[in-house]
Image (tube, rainbow, N blue to C red; front, top):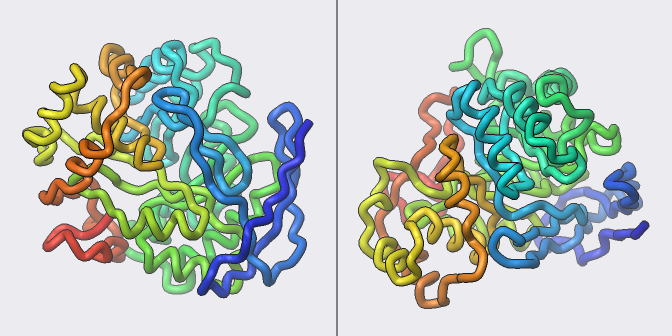
Length: 352
C-alpha cells in the first residue's frame, strides 16, 4: 500500500478554489479525495516514464495511464469488438471510447473476450453533449454498456451542452461549468477514478479553472493533435496547469496533407518505419498519450511497434515545424463554436 499526497505549489494567475487531495491506492482502489482547503488549488505535477509502448503518464491525481491506447471513434459495432480484443491480446492496455460513438457495448464485450483482467486495463469514456444535465445517467449508461463497475477516466466530450430534443440548440440555463460541477460529484463514488475534458481550447479552460464551482483540475484534456495541428500553446498551457493532453486523430486522416508530406516520409524511410509509426512516436516524445484508431489487426499490431527506436531532436523539430494546417474534427455541427484560432498559426483553420 502506498500513499500519494498532492502537494505542488498553487497555479499562478488562477482564482480556482480547488483541492489538496489524498489518494490511497490499494488493489487499484482510489479513495475519495479529501478537500483540505477549498480556496487553495494544489495538484500533483504530471510526469512521463518509460519509452515506446512502455510509456506511462502519471496524471495530477497520481493515476498512471498507459501512453498508447486504441481509439474507437467511427469504428463500426461488429468491427470494434474484434479490434478491442485483438489490441488487448497484442499488448495494448488503454482503450478509448465514448457514449456518442454508440459502440460501448461492443467495446465492453471485446474487453471480456480478450481474457485480459479488467484491473490491467485503462478505460476512458466520455459524457455526450445531450447528457450534460444528466451526468449520473450518462455514467450509468456507459458503465452498463461497458460491463464494468468503473472507468479509469471520464471526460466531458465537448464544451457544448446541447438540448436533447434539438441538437442544434444549446441550453440557455446551462453550460460546461455546470456540467463540470456535476462531474466532480462522481469522484469518490467508485464509478470514475479520474475526470477530465475534451476539445477544450485555452479560453474555455480559463473559464473552467476560474469558475467558483471548480474544485478539481481536469486530469486530462483530449484534443486533436498531429503535425498539421500541433497546438504548442495549448500544450504549454495545460502543462503549466498540471493537465495531461491525449492526442486524438494523432495520425491525421487519409485526406490530410500528412498523407503526402515529404518530411514525414523521409523520416519514416530513415528509420525503416511507417509514417503512422513516426507520428505516434512524435506524439509520445512530445509528452502526449496517443490513441490511434484502427479495426484492422495488422495495423493495430503495426501501431504498437514503437519499441527500440526513437526520433532525434532534429526530426522532432522538423515534424513540429511542418507549416500546413488541417483539421480532422471541426465544430460546425455543434450549436456553438468551441474552436478558435488561439494558436495564431492556423489562418482559416481554427486551433484544436
